[in-house]
Figure 1 (cartoon, rainbow, N blue to C red):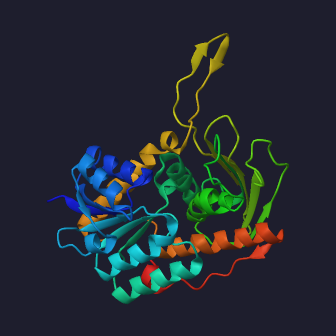
Figure 2: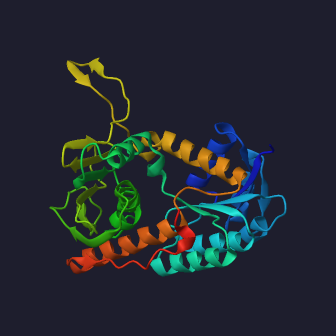
Figure 3: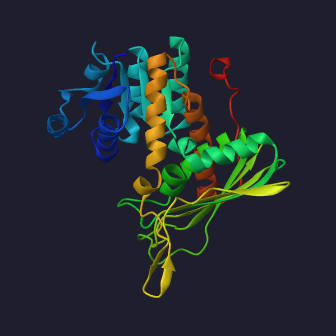
Length: 336
């Protein structure tokens, strides 16, 4: 079977990483074209990777020799390009978030339903991490009873330039919002965000760390620590406390080193070191599914559900109150 011909909109760092991943490590698909608002930079990327550069994302999306689309632009343009792909009848992978607001996500959902076929997948790659998949398997088995509490942490060595207090929910803990909803198989009922003492390493005016507290519809209580200036590495934790056992997310497999009178086990420095296998699996499964005529990863509805919970958590942070989360009923279109 011929390779899936992929066009990518957005040639920044994550876009270029995906080009290299798909064209050098994976099978069955190839990025053959790119588009970017900065056309000169787009042309330089196209030349480097042997791609065709398009003047606009819409022109590439509607090209007859492009089978599927990846959207890695800045967040405000996601809705525009995902919707264009839906109208073109092409599979589209959109990095998180699907769109910046729940309302924008709902518009994408409406357009996809109107088109009559699921075409959209959202880039919540933690669902593809082997450790999280182990947790999902153990939870679903029921062997350890029902989950009661989850204790999670998401720590970065240092925050990106331009990081804001709001970014911890909207750009960091959004991963937990999605993957924990997937692990437990249920929606959230309330959200709260509290501020511990702020680290001296935070940028001026930024509150870091933060703790997000979620309660699910069945009463599972979740706390997620976001500490984006921890200054020791990239560290992700998830402990699921069940009625008859505790399940812990496995640590990455790093060798113990004996040096300088100490035993040292290195940890990852950033997300690219921690989750490469998850990204590879995510895109390989997406390519395989597209070639088989379907998508089976996080859907546009999952993108909406994630942004709805994130918006509630952001409101809770800004008002320092507990905010209820009210989802619309999931359309039959998305029920599997």
